[in-house]
Length: 83
Image 1 (cartoon, one colour):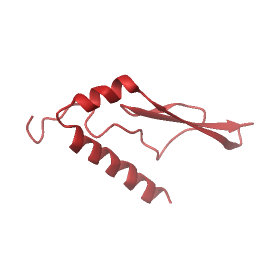
Image 2 (tube, helix red, strand yellow):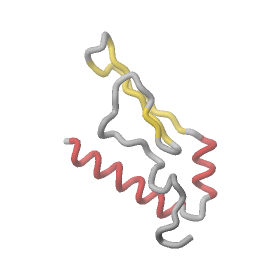
Image 3 (tube, one colour):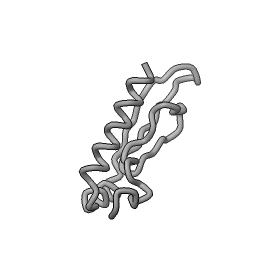
């Protein structure tokens, strides 16, 4: 693959955390999470999920290392700007 010819899922292993809505599953390619509310007021529980079939697909990809680094970079940047 050339530098600009990545798969559609490149850098998308983790879901975006910036605009997560409560009581809704937010998905990336291999990981997902849900913030659950009590009485519609505050987050009472957090749930994460790993999509093992997608994770296995990621592991088999020739671009796994770079994609994983980009995915982690995006999550790190989202955490920094969310504060």
